[in-house]
Length: 209
Image (tube, rainbow, N blue to C red):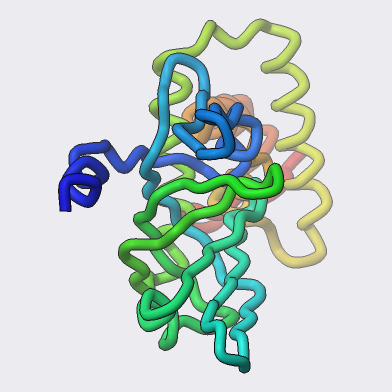
């Protein structure tokens, strides 16, 4: 009971999977203590992604392994014994919200899920934008050379979509996942003002030249 209460006191940090994968597992002997990422010591996480694989044991040892992907990376969800009930209704192809405790075994960091709940896939983009916004508020200003490179990528995406009648701004944000949505929207606004692109309908842009 005391151990369970201890876990409940830990904040479930919101992260993209790719960020968790670059964190440093801190061990106490063979026991995993926490994941070190920047100035944070992470024990519990709140992640959102798509289930791309599921495996359930068929023998006496009951366990269930799922692979979660959010576009930035993949991480396993692992449940054992009676805990597999939490995953029994979760299947490949679903988008899910996962709150759970981080574990590490054989140099693999995975999540022991406490809560797994199906979500609308649109929340993947919302979560990405939320995390990127927090990152951009805490990061150094983007230099002019980086802005130029981002602008070129945006223009290339718009030009390449002419055969389809344009491209959704949301798709550009998803494709350029290393860049914050604020910067992408800022550069699209500039391109619209310069008359290089136009907006046939809200949220969709086309090349004007």
